[in-house]
Image 1 (cartoon, rainbow, N blue to C red):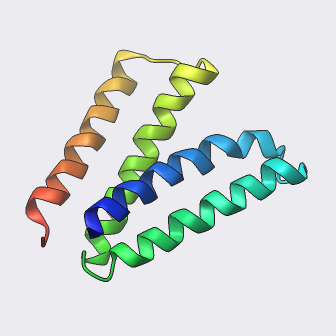
Image 2: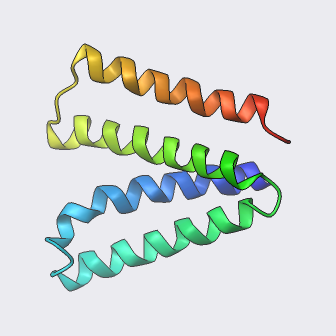
Image 3: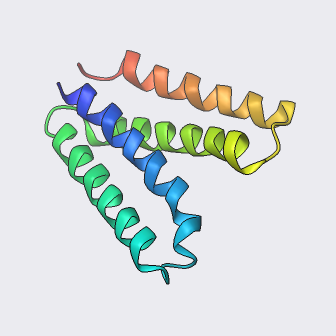
Amino acid sequence: MAWILLIIAGGLEVAWASMLPATHGLTRPWPTAGFVVLLAGSMLLLSLATKTIPVGTAYGVWVGIGAVGAAIVGIVLHGDPATAGRLVFLALLVASVIGLKVTGAH
């Protein structure tokens, strides 16, 4: 169950990171409120996951999901460059997250 919570927390991290530009520096109330709610939900689920998963593993996986997800959203929705180098390094992040899962405590 902790891994499911962690994956959802990572998805919420992608959502809040992707919503951040819409806040215009936290000056627009509704996007900022959405950002804060998503951020709080992500942190709550991360904290619940760390009751079972070691914090270093959980945090690394959470950051990895968020970083890769936000980069993909940037490429797909915002026209960020999808160069070969960027894609290789995103693949390395995914490999690192899988490595943390495989070698970490269950």
